[in-house]
Length: 191
Ligand code: AMP
Image 1 (cartoon, rainbow, N blue to C red):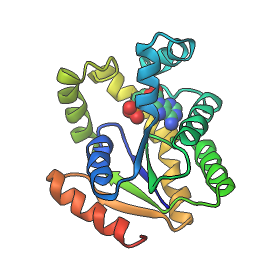
Image 2 (cartoon, helix red, strand yellow):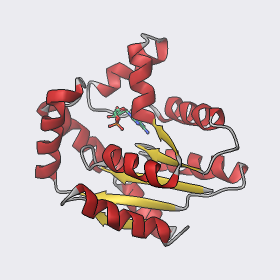
Image 3 (cartoon, rainbow, N blue to C red):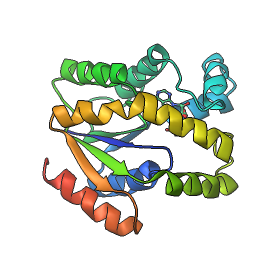
Image 4 (tube, rainbow, N blue to C red):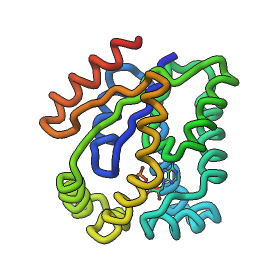
């Protein structure tokens, strides 16, 4: 079972590269951001709670997101080739919860693809994406808050995964195909 975490700041290309990984390896996609946006669209209680955090560039509380992840993972069933976790984990508590969830299933994280992109490029990409994504959080003001949140709460995960020997550093600036070929090499090294 291939369990890939795709890790990086907002705008680092996680969604774009996830699509290519899914096409090649046939793994299931779990994007906590997509799950939350679907809840917001459906106007559910969870969606209403999440929207307040998302629109302010903050993280949705760990307890909520860990529950969402567990039920989304269970819904995928057992007959799958693996999973790409996109936008999860974002905190150490989430990473520990993921390790436990996978261990309960006799599995582990196979590799963490760390897309590294400088801030200037990230903000530029998010603003450009905002023109077509329709996402309320893809604007300059919220993007800056999201980056602060990333550095304060999510970045420590890089060391967490380096210590576990799982972090594959990928330069996230360049052509989509060149970046993907480095990702593919990192995945094939653990397959
Ligand atoms: P994304 O689509 O991954 O950029 O997520 C959009 C927003 O959803 C984030 O800025 C957070 O507010 C929220 N979110 C998504 N995934 C998580 C997570 N794993 N933990 C906490 N909040 C999350």
